[in-house]
Image 1 (tube, rainbow, N blue to C red):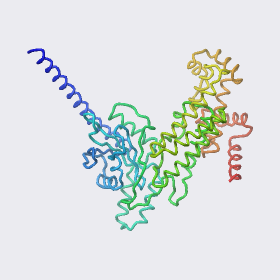
Image 2 (cartoon, rainbow, N blue to C red):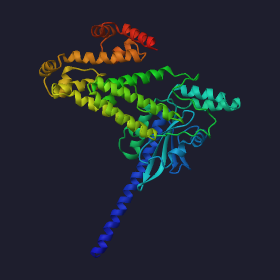
Image 3 (tube, rainbow, N blue to C red):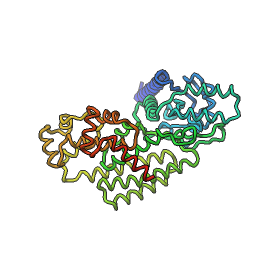
Image 4 (spheres, helix red, strand yellow):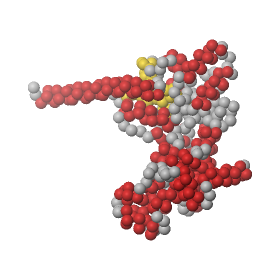
Length: 444
């Protein structure tokens, strides 16, 4: 065999090996997808679906009521949206229909092109979703038998927080691509066509009587106050702290017609609050107002839910990073600044001087002396101050009991928490909550 023949043989063998490796990888993906489907279904009753790339053919599902929910999926427009040109094929997309059913979707690839569509769902993200559906069904001209059958099917749908559902979507992405993805990289369905549905849309944050769900309002208020406090502090680890505080990383509701504009307005208002918090954190007013103008313009230009969430997250990171840089002044050394940052990042965890000193790279004695010389306060008192500041936010913005706050913020007992709080604030936690809420009622 000549050199030309040998070269052709080598290239043919290499091509064959690559093809076999790809086939083996695809086979492994199919095996993993089956295992993944069984795991999520056994864990929380979450169903998994596998469609052709166009969504026309269903290959398999683990949903016990496959036909009924396949009808919901097709008629709601969610499947059409997932297979539409507006969706990127290399990132997960979160979908929601007009009655509050929520799905996650992502594509399986072969030979450099999307081959199949994998979906998980449906779920409800709160118990109020089911109450809303029950109320909506009673308004429809359905027989009692049909209404009862639909309600029984709906009762089997798992109820998950959006944070937990987001974790399952992250697992789906890793199963398909063997890579991690952050939840801020998700895509979101931005328009819900309601013409094909017989149900009236009821937002998940509304109770059945049309009033705001106090639990969700409380969580939103708490989240906003916590974010603003982190801007004042320039806390670079705000994402990790937020996950532990509220679990809010994904929107609880997807905008229907008119609501996208209201959400954009709310974020523009929140941008103004971020500006004031940044000024309180030490940012010059001229700089803060210039940032506000820039971010408001970006919010206005956002055309989709995904764009809006991306701009909002970048806005938060921009404010926090700039405040952090301004607070890291020459008057405070790098080790002391690292110490403060470490404490803020781990404020909900037990904190010992030994572990903080180990992180900074100094002895406990040297760090204590230097911290006190530069900050004018002991490390242990700085930790108490940070925890008391967070406790003040929770007392006003949540219905958490004093015992819950004391335990979450790593105080040994309610009595000790009350003692420290009284020393720092001048009154007991209960009295502080009563006083601040009374002032809010007067202002209203």
